Image (cartoon, rainbow, N blue to C red; front, side):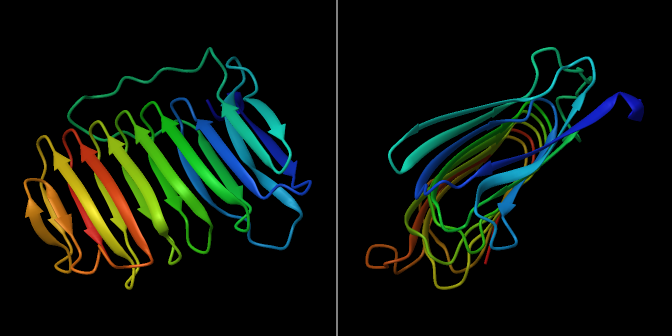
Length: 221
């Protein structure tokens, strides 16, 4: 099967962009998003695997002065895997995407059933909305997070969200069949709602909504 998996290596130049929206749909594949490692004058870059019969992923860039929207989509005729509803599943392909950490970013990320890993360490982000049909969800949040909004959901896997010490948060955490594992610095203030004591006054604070249909939801510091 490996001979039928190809890779699209891509780069998008920065071209003076300071604010961007990223709309990423990885199909059935695993998805990883983090920051560019060097000083490249790029908005984004990465490697997107796809099946030969599926067709190359599409990239659409729309722009207005100082702001762009980059949409990445898997091919329409993807390979479909049988996914058990009671277990998290691993994707058949890998998407590894790296974003410019100096660009103020809004990120929407989706996989039909693969694992999703988002590491926002050192990045400037306004909002994140990530979901997967059946894989695990792993999100690492940044230290600088003024009024950041985060949504992280999965149908069957586990959700893990890591919040840096010194960042306040209000967390709406639910699970259908698993359990919620909450860091002790977040106090339960209502049903399915947890909050740090300094949330109302903190400069760095995050509003988080997280859910798993069948797995555990874990909030770590």
